Image (cartoon, rainbow, N blue to C red; front, top):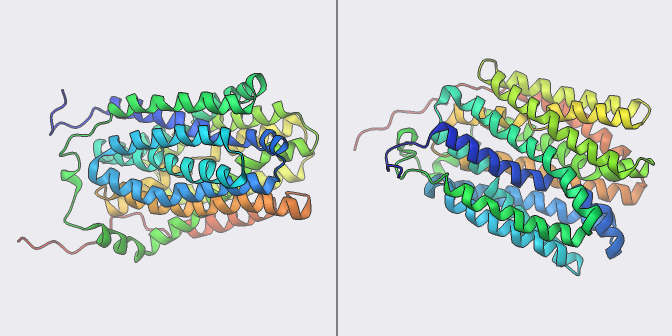
Length: 404
């Protein structure tokens, strides 16, 4: 039995945390495959589906702040268990929703809240509290790579489930599968004294005020907004974009799987490089490279090969921002409120995701094309590269606390 003073082993944290992220993020990355089956059978517009998924991203960001607060205070276990239950209920509700409103409440609000409790902010909080600082960036890269492996593994599985059993049954099967998070979460029960070594006498309100007065924190949030916009738009709308251009559904499934496969290498590489290089420069390079990859994708003739090359390039850059951004937050502010502060940064990411998903559907319905949204994604990538360069990565200077 784990002592109340003994930290969890690095192996346990990484294996269980990685498996949880693999499952939670893997399922999420396949939601774009449901756009056309659901809208065609239900007679809904793409904007209806896009709005629900946009609400999901926004809900994830809003609830992520509170999930982070609870995880910092109570430990990750309770938050992960609640998140797994919400996830299962949301997927089942998504399958059985008869109206756009109910679909938005289940696929949007409920699954968004579930993802807040089962993905990076909570898992990174455990990593920050349980793994030494010199290995933290690398460990965060491993966890992010697990999410990428989940995409590589789960997207083809979801595609096959839809093809073989229909989209209703496929969602119900995923609802049962996601409950496997609960036994894995039990292995991440943290010792009661887990965070004492890294904690200072600072209230939640003081930590929030300190962060938002610090310019580098705001710049990180601005960059993460762009990350969310780009990833959500591509992840949800690229399958429909490719089908509109005459490519088969299998091309989209394989492209999303390739994004997941190459993201394994990208996130691990980013985490490893972040331990030795300036993270702000790596972030700027990632955002600029994304803008270049999108521009080339639009300029070159569209074919399955060009789609796969684009997917591989974007995959390498996909979640590589995650360990770097979270690592900078930990470096600046410490780990005492890491899950909560990470939740605020991620809220900015999810506001961008909301706009990326919703704007894709809105402009498509208005213009009959995704071209304008692609151009916006390129411009935002250049902007994100510029705002990350001035970020200061060193620990914030705080006045020493006076003894009582």
